[in-house]
Image (cartoon, rainbow, N blue to C red):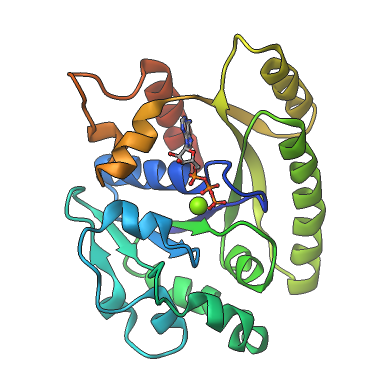
Amino acid sequence: MAKTIAFHLQKGGVGKTTISGTLACQSAMDGFKTILIDVDPQGNASSWFLKDSPRYEFADVIQGKCYIKDAIVPVPTVENLFILPTFGINGSLKNYSETKLAEEPFVIQDAVTEIKKEFPHIILDLSPGLGRLERSALIASDEVITPMTPEVFSLDGLEIFIDELAKIKKNFRVNIKHKNIIINSYDERIRQHREIFRAASEGNFNIFRIPVDPVFRKSQEAQKAPQMFRQSGRGLKPKTLEAINELESIIWR
Ligand SMILES: Nc1ncnc2c1ncn2[C@@H]1O[C@H](COP(=O)(O)OP(=O)(O)OP(=O)(O)O)[C@@H](O)[C@H]1O
Ligand SMILES: [Mg+2]
């Protein structure tokens, strides 16, 4: 059965795009037809994976300005990976989410239902915040995975997110699983990181740790999958690959 996973925490810069993009690549590299939907008006996931500007964007799909199939583009460097892009510059997602989306909160859910007929693995990269756009994306998802950085503010952010998610589930009468948390940019040698890990482990979550790895940023600059990126013969750290493989093996169950 097809599954839709959103990566979200309302806090900015915690690794939502990096992790959702990397796991989308991994899913595709493992042979699953995978789509990454760029639900962030910043369009970071799209500029990471696409060199040329596409004709249509995700906002065109949800506004009924084009067919879904016409807006989906293959990622040239990763077989089986497709993207439903958002234009970071001159895109209409931000404007749409601040105006019309209020009247149609299920519009993303409707698009995802269609996409599920073609794609068994669907990943949503969300923008920071918890406004209409993020809510609509969450109610379109079967599961949300929360990336956070090992800092106290992220831990506070997680508490707020748990609370808000409960309200969204109640108000929209949807069931969204939330059982996996990723502590990103984790360094075992730093005491504060270990303490954050311990504190996060007190909840009822599976906690994954992804180390600081400069290959993420470099692969984004090179517009490549991090798993395929090499510089002086070096790619992602073994610990990073281990975490990605572990995550990939459980999230689609
Ligand atoms: N594990 C990591 N090691 C090193 N750098 C990382 C790691 N994860 C993310 N980064 C870098 O941190 C920056 C922020 O990451 P990213 O854009 O994925 O965060 P985000 O949560 O999507 O941000 P936003 O809230 O703006 O959408 C990027 O430059 C990315 O390359
Ligand atoms: Mg992002």
